[in-house]
Length: 195
Image (cartoon, rainbow, N blue to C red):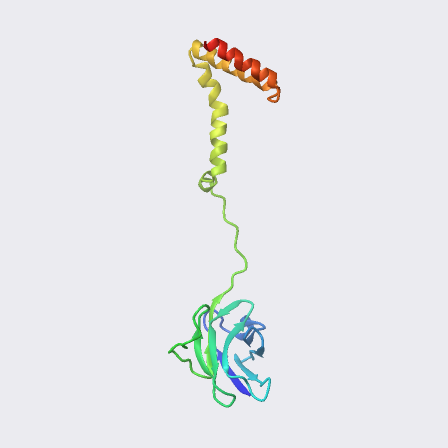
């Protein structure tokens, strides 16, 4: 059997065991686990699965609800040797192992407190009008309010042309587009007026 032991050093992020809560130290996502005691120490007795523990590399992590800890790479040469500990960052290659070795028994410190509640943002009028949908709505409202004033100030000839276009558009919308005879007659009359 190989013993993996260490302590959790309290700091300003987590000053005591009461704040840490029910935490445990696990190897390889829970294959082996050990509880953190009141004084912050932990001990995992890695029992052999066969005649002895298989040499290899294991990842040690602390599972705590409110805090984040660094992961540690544990290299076991054989079942009688003391394991070697190195810092581990997810995504780093396993071979060759890093040059930095950590002292055994391990000393782990909380790195960050989890924040599960994000307070809602306060109301900001400027950020509301920077939204594209609000900009579209503001432009549409300006057109609805301002267009009658623009039309009222147009000269009579331009106003008459606009009304004729609207009447033609309304007439085209009343006839179904699938009526081929109407489209044929309309196209022929347009050709006759052009020639």
